[in-house]
Image (tube, rainbow, N blue to C red; front, top):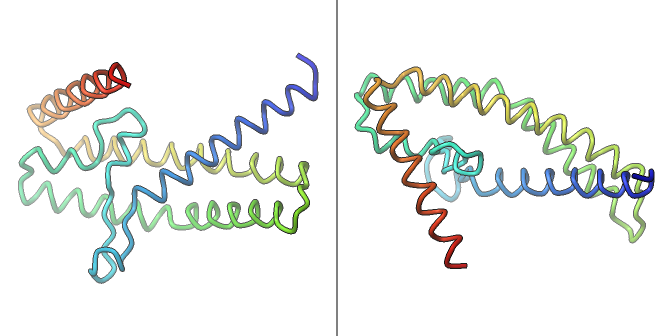
Length: 165
């Protein structure tokens, strides 16, 4: 593969990752204004985009009060510990937008920003995976089985939807 074509492919790939991540973040977290509740933020199905049954599926498992409290503590800890990473990603997105403002496109700068964002996005995905694993550790074997069943049902429904498209 020649270098210009590889460079174009790399930029397109990184752009797609950045766009998908931005959309996922925008859709997965509701704002305080939307909810009308103090500082509480709620996860909304982020896991579905990553092939898991999703954080929202935990609600359907009839968790005990103790499990709910542990899940809440895990989410709050995750939100706090990952705040710097989210802020870095937000800043990189802003820098990328600025790189394309004014009608001129600086390909080298955009490539650098997308490369920076891709590594941050990969780190964020790893952190979300750790969050999911920690939340799974709170579940009983029966709840884990139920979660796997929900995941299988979701995949089956998604497969049926794709067939009708």
